[in-house]
Amino acid sequence: MSKKLNISTSLEVYENLQELASEDFLLMEHAVKARSRAYAPYSEFAVGCAILLENNEIVTGNNQENAAYPSGLCAERVALFYAGSQYPGVPVKKMVLTAGPMSSDFFKPVPPCGACRQVISEYEKRQENGIEIYFMGTGGKVVRASSMESLLPLSFDKNYL
Ligand code: THU
Image (cartoon, helix red, strand yellow):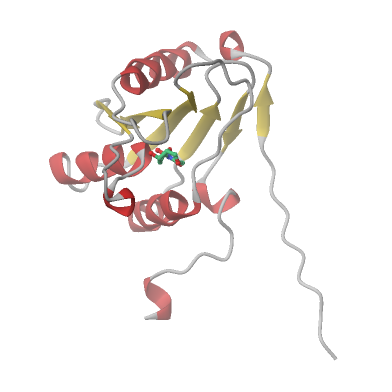
């Protein structure tokens, strides 16, 4: 007889940016600035990411597209790989995201794509401490996940290798 396995997750929803704690609001301002520098001429969908490290450094990134579409990279991975290369071994505390079309407002919170979740999950497991994720559209509601595990349960990791 098979058994049912239920997986549940819990997210926090803030009505708007102003509800965030000042540190998180500030971090989102960095993400907004980073988003304005995205290179996304093909999708015209710009994404900005700001990362707060344990040493209080802030690293930002944005999506970098390419005429050979799959060669481009998402904002989260641009930022996270930069953080990993510049500050090896320094844990990531938080990641903050803003995303939406370049030419209009977008008030639906945009969660990180599957590939970015997998990459963030690797960093989270490596540091053995949760990474908080905040995501929004270009404004409006902000969603908070207390760790990547809550956005990507049952993730593949080195223990399966
Ligand atoms: N994108 C990101 O930067 N992060 C995500 O999590 C989702 C998608 C980018 C990739 C591409 O440049 C554009 O958004 C449209 O998919």
